[in-house]
Length: 384
Image (cartoon, rainbow, N blue to C red; front, side):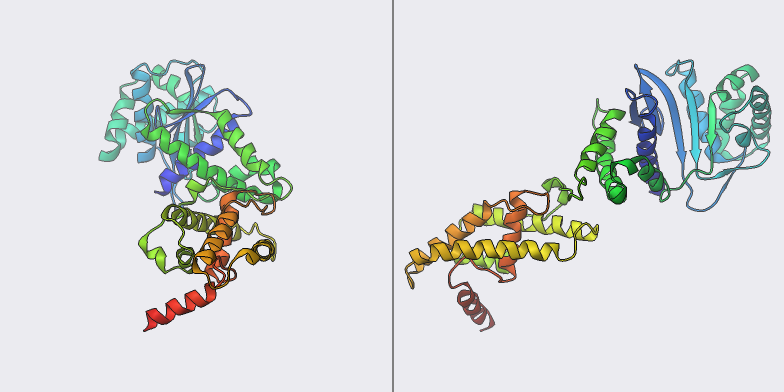
């Protein structure tokens, strides 16, 4: 699992880096290779990503190496990859063993390094008896020295690469100019979007390659949410907030809606707003984006607005008339569900409405003029 996540994060990092060189390029996952970059319908670079949780040495007999060479040799022999400047990257958290072909094939290898690497790999392919690498070794041994040199001239071994955790530091380094004080959160939001993109690439036909410009567009969009210390707002659907269920009937804010005889559609909408707002506010709190007392001040503002509205309308209600009191409660709840009170830079109806329901759940306000009496009576009945 760590290997798959490493591959996804590595693709995001390389996409950000590629923007500086080929802004019109495209990136694919598991299409030609673990990761591939294309431009003008030509594959420019293939990447094999190898992740190890513990320190490891990469030698000329390593299974990682021979599995990688087998894939690249197969691609070349099938004629899929014909670009003269095509590069092959083996990116691994392991360290190339001193004196190995892998050490010689680091970026900047000379022609003499490549010839020596061919010799070392042919010897390793002949001497090894490892069944796991047998197919790759056999494929390499079918190549002539000239063919092997042509292949290895295109290979860059990028060893000692940052691991699954550390590669996020590299991603943050690419994003730091968007907002130095919130770069970790921006990277986290960008990765969340990227995983969705990768998922679509893997399961949806016709969407295997993603323009790298999409990455910076999305990164800029996320970065803009943090300008002036703004709060980011998630797509409500991405918050995974639960929908209405019968279990919610035990919640005080639902009982409050039942007390004013609100229709089912409005109750379900209220439950949705409550859980979405709670999820968004909790996420802000977990990510340390809220200022001290900011959430409490917002709720206090909502209570003040509610009380002013309540005081201006309550005189129209006939005291003791259950129908009139319930109607008044429905009007107050409807009013609250349509408000858009700004939470710092965020202006969303579902945030405001859900926060009103949060106050109702804590009994800090009530839609029915006698909500405390009704709920206490209900509790007495339940206890009996």
